[in-house]
Length: 208
Image (cartoon, rainbow, N blue to C red):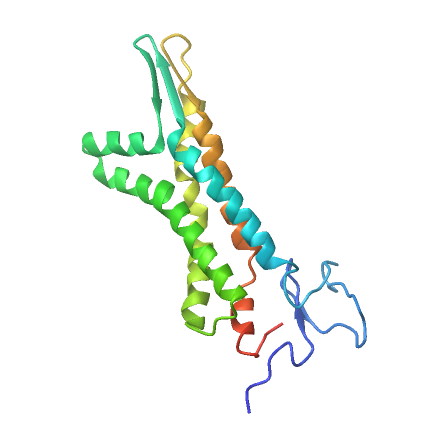
């Protein structure tokens, strides 16, 4: 006999404050007793919302890497830098550890997050029972590393705030920074919209 689960015992977890509570018997709709949020056994339309956010992020990913993220103006002229040109400059100037960090955080992480979340959403749709625990750990990893994707935008914003010397030198954010920020925010929202408990629903032992 399989172990009892929260869903079988009639408990639901709040998606806002994460309080686990038992709704009144026979109630069609109920609210969390602590924060008042609507309780659901699973996040409503989680897969559809995740796909919508992922598609939007994928559309923005290309211009985020093609458009300049930083435009430097000085008495010597104007220079535009994309994420990849910035990585190349750091590498050729001898700062290869920093170049590797920026490439990892600003290029690879958003791309891998797009593929990983797409894989998780597709596996849930197909009710796959393969590699349940590794998929759960993959989701936890995505949640952990997602916050570091803003490294490049953070650096640009700091430079924009610090370097403003009028005609001598001036740095402003390019369109690529806006697109890249959109990619990061949309992938973070997609990760938040996805319900990792759906991974285990295929086994028939769904937890609430």
